[in-house]
Image 1: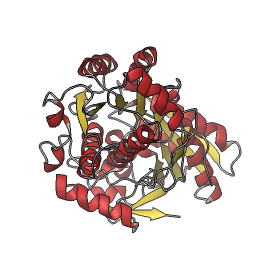
Image 2 (image 1 turned 45 degrees about the horizontal axis):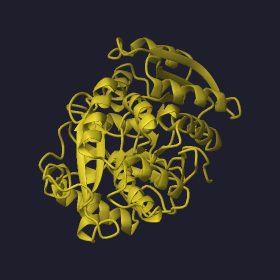
Image 3 (image 1 turned 60 degrees about the vertical axis):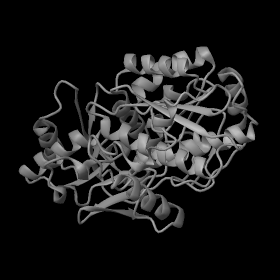
Length: 396
């Protein structure tokens, strides 16, 4: 089932990383340590990256940082891009749009040729506005909002919010997982509402009924008892949770406390739930969600990535690390196909790369034969993962 817009591989990413994971690892060579070495302009390719490595979303940003560093190290060890070495400089945006723009300007002053980022949607949209004005190439590994790739200089590795909602509804309906479905979503978050709205729309085409739709906001995301009770009273056999793992861990805990045990189904933001401090992972058994990467795959390319990542960081990579890893290799492929040179201006680099992006195909860890459309959206197959016995398992 090929997906045209931000198509996504669906799986559970073993987000077994802590909020400050990956700092000071041996994969740092070729990364922002090298970026501070003062290489002469035109002698290296400078790839900037932006994401949260402090604050509540740090688990995502650290994973992206690690995945990007690992790819850069491999590329440099293999001779670089067209024989030219790569420097990676990673800036922290704390999941804040204003700080993300400041980080972009820092990288611009540094001489960035292309940007991997940003990691989260709201900062990505903000950076996208200035990057479009500058005509700077950007490839977000994990920015899912539609607006992240609204300009022709922007592409993404992950799949979009609407595609996640659409594919989730299709999967639930086509697999016959439930007849009565409830949804709990964050009405204050563009990621959550984007997925939810697409889910509701596609549900009209599927053989299940949405019996309860309950919202919460960023100001009230610790007590979900009211939403869960309404879902339970409505007889929901499945509860759709299009938001992040931190809140989801509370939902699962509170549901268990009220003896409510439907199927819980989430999206890629669920990645990381097994690493929540103090969370009983048994509560997540049978949780299903979509994600583009699974570390338990038997694919040789994935297993090598998992092994190398573990050796470098002492962790299992999650989907954000995988998206970043593939993102760096996509940048490499586009630079080589576009015949980019390190002495070109960022604007000229962008013009060459955005044409090349629709020509390249890479066999990555998130998809084989991964390609891009001019819209910025990737084409790849979806996957679903289910947590069993405290670990991830791919389901058909």
